[in-house]
Image (tube, rainbow, N blue to C red; front, side, top):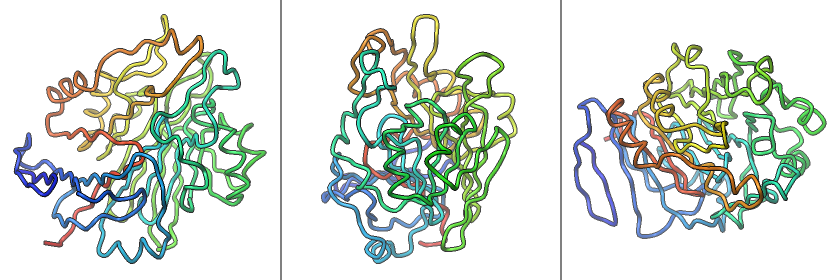
Length: 342
């Protein structure tokens, strides 16, 4: 059974398997600002907490404030969706910024062809970020390696650690001096100030070019302290054969397909289910990276296939013990590590 707390009312709901992790969603009467800490909910198993806050960020807690409020927190991953392909992840004392687009629109330098703006975090700026320990780049195109964001980020944080696909080397080398390029299969260990470690392993993503071109990257992150893992690839395109020996407690993936005539831009639906099943996911965090205010010729011909509900139905048939956690832009979603607290 799992406990769901909503607006002060509690109810127990059955899970699909007796040994499934407990899901807890807290809907507090007072909203929690982005990057703040909610009251601790102890647990003996891997669980989740969703903290609701205003969709537009207005304040960021200082490090001291966060420490004072955190108490005996045991979260393994805190995931904040920043729309598009952008995320802020916090784990093991590290803040990891993923594929950020925080300055201007996404237009690939050709706004008449495609020009997209965020729907909800319109007021969120680069300066609203807390101090970031690592920049993680999955692909070399502008919707992942956004130069309008990365140029000012390099000025703000010139020594930031960057982990990226080698395909982005011509773009990143002029901006950052501390870059590690990972080929699929390569790993790098991040060290937090508190002594914790996070392993980052690159996996093979889509090939955006001729068949002989190097694939872009996905990543598996493992919090070595908690031994909880996360998989991320923003197109739901991967080499399933190369992933068959991998495992991930948390899978972040698109679930709604985005299609051009005779070409799949972003996969999802049954492919997302196969991915979650292959990795034996406990939680699936669906990202809707096509939910942008877009205009231009390309935006008019991109078609969507599938819905969130159709994905959930497919997943329930194939992996009934997995829980779908829909992120809200700007709202931290916490995956809690097993704890001995009661």
